[in-house]
Length: 263
Length: 326
Image (cartoon, rainbow over all chains, first blue to last red):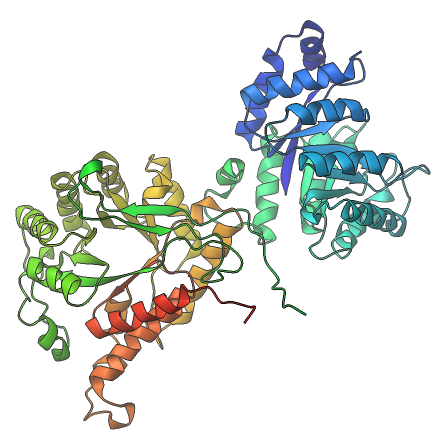
């Protein structure tokens, strides 16, 4: 599993300020820090406050790429903003995200095919987030079929089973784990899986512990990627360890350090 | 209906290492040899690129071996004790792609050759053959730490492949390779974890990974070949799946291992049911080598000239892509 670094997001005060002032320093500092900490992608989210989402997304992409060679994960519900970002991405990017709904899937998968981008597909539709694994898997199958019809290879489709905070939807936890396992059976080669890691701990007092425990359990159930805090050393060490235990990486004494350097 | 082969897509490929340096690059070699670079498992040409064929090296010693089987005498008897002539014969008559010079004579229990003697024999061999050269120490750590850095310095820029760096003893040889532009063999005792860790330790000293060849240790057919094989196979899978600390080309000391076996050495008279001794030993060497080629070995070290012919023939055949349309 790898981390999509979550820190370049207008929800954070320093990034929101950077956007307002058009001052790239905070964005670039976080791009660099997440890069050296072991992030494999950088999430780019304008945040809700930005007035011109299209212009801000393009600017964030441009300044982030000046500081890091990592590919970007363009995070917005505004698809015009995502397309503006894709136009200036130097490396194949990831689109975050699309639900199992038409015509949204048409717009996103068309863009993904055009720009050779990966896509995060959310296991939800107009009816909201499903309560059980079966419905999540059924929606994942709709995403798989739609992606395939646009020629998106399965290794570029990341299914997000959608995680709820454990103090809100505790009963979703085992359903998410079950979904992670079943999504792998939908196609051969199988689609990949992703979660928003910090969702599990929203509003709780043990955020970091919940996040990294969830990461380890996710890896044991086939999780491939997570949007999360790459600068949290304990999280990265936990991921490296879970990968070794699941025989995904070959053990050596420096396995934690080397995990952070793998790109 | 046409047959469509299932293809695996890998994220990564095996690194390449260039052995030897020509005049333009600061050395005196007539040619260089590039190993590695494959983006698929051994010889699956339909699935990825295998830009460089595996190469075969013959072993030359700085002293006349006293413990080699008498069947070597007709081939090497006239050049034993003269490493330069021995090397020349291996290249010109026996078709070795490159030479492994083992400084066995430096062993305090054999000839205790001085640093100067070792440097001289390396230089003599370099002058005698145009091919890239691998230089191995005598195997006694203290002595090797004296002679190998001196050899590295005296041949600065030649792009030698020097060995052996091991987990407990890698720093001085790594430093010598860094300063004098040589390549390094990182040896590990049939242990994938130590193999990976040693590569990390060496690259942390800033020797680039494209200057490292790994020797995960091999064993002869019948003596644990499958252990060495599975380590090499695992390293190759790791490399292709993105583990750069296992992505170095592999060298294997096949001849040395095979000639320690009873099956290679026992006389025809003592084991008549096993067939004629020399043929048997050649096949033992060639079979061990060709099995390890399938595990991903890039540089095969042999002893018997006739095994070289067989292994090179096998490599030529394996380097021709299969045509599924026929």
